Image (cartoon, rainbow, N blue to C red; front, side, top):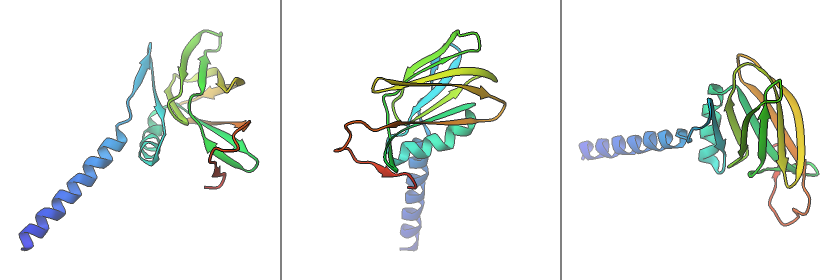
Length: 150
């Protein structure tokens, strides 16, 4: 009986470890020499993104706000160009997070959501640079939002 209990515990532990490994396996995509990961839909993907974020030089996060509340968004068109204006990466996000592995330097990042574009210059250094983007909700009265402090 004790052996059976021990085997069940070992199997349960193995399944938990296997589940964690699957959650951490967000697909890495490439565009030229640039590696990136996009996603963050659901708690497993959010956990995987947060686990991988330290391996990327730029982490972008996207949200839509309604008053003091905001919700994560996907389908954001992101264009990154180098200091001289040369295109580096052009993608549409699969979730609220975009992790990009860029060499150190200055980049113009433009993000477009529902036809509204926000642009800024971001300095990428030797560590991880985080930047958050937020748009005012328009016509989203029926969509669920999360509290900004959640």
